[in-house]
Length: 268
Image 1: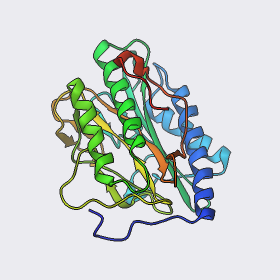
Image 2 (image 1 turned 90 degrees about the vertical axis):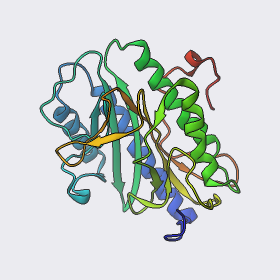
Image 3 (image 1 turned 90 degrees about the horizontal axis):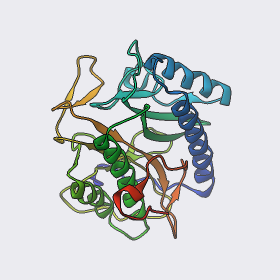
């Protein structure tokens, strides 16, 4: 990790392009999340996002990426990430993981959240709240001069307090002109020497948290990743800029869950 290639440092002009891409990615994610409701198919959700991207003059960063057939990733309940929109009808009690990446003027914004459909149970509520809070715990570590591995480790250290597990087979990543750039950003402390965070680095931080075991299976479509025990999973993601001071969330949106349910103050 960190030895394969140099971690890109964005210039002021490039950072401004990433701010614009991040804002649009957040707009698409929020609009599409609001469109989700019981009775709609996941394909309808995917096509809503496609049409909304076209309206804003941007393209999906996911469509045809390594031959991925969807415009967004829509993953249901026990599905962790990389679900493909199709004929499945969304029903009350579902957890819909929605991941949106857009490309604007050659730059990518990447973000995700978990949408509860109607009434959900207590475990689902806790899972969503803990996952989203773990994202903000990690973001609080996204500071210049700090080891990347401390940021990574903070996710697992936080979620295990609540009995949840991190997915180790999938990681966050750098993002910029490419959807996946250096460095890898796992949700646990990886072995070896850690890169040091520097101003101008941009990370897609994305906790993928399971209610049960942390192991996963790839389904027959070759893309969708499911929890091995088929218990629920939750996913949240922001694109985050390392600055000279506080981390800047380029894909800012209002929070989904209520961290006060956990008895802890939210990260601001």
